[in-house]
Length: 100
Image (tube, rainbow, N blue to C red; front, side):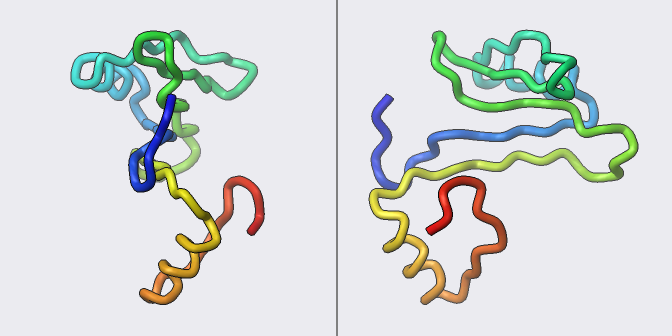
């Protein structure tokens, strides 16, 4: 897949009620979601037409947190994007991938 600057390229989705959450994305977005891998805490890869679009998994019952959807955006230059964000008052709290 080719993603242009500013377009979503990945999602991470966590649900307290995994069955209800996965059914929502199946109906509204046409996601294909296989059963989660118990060895990975129930993590599953959702896809559309065979292309992965999101990681999805249950929030552990002992964690009292709301459902969460993280959307990852494509940028053409990560250093430029981070500088632009910082100049507008944003701060990087966590880097998921390569440190820059």
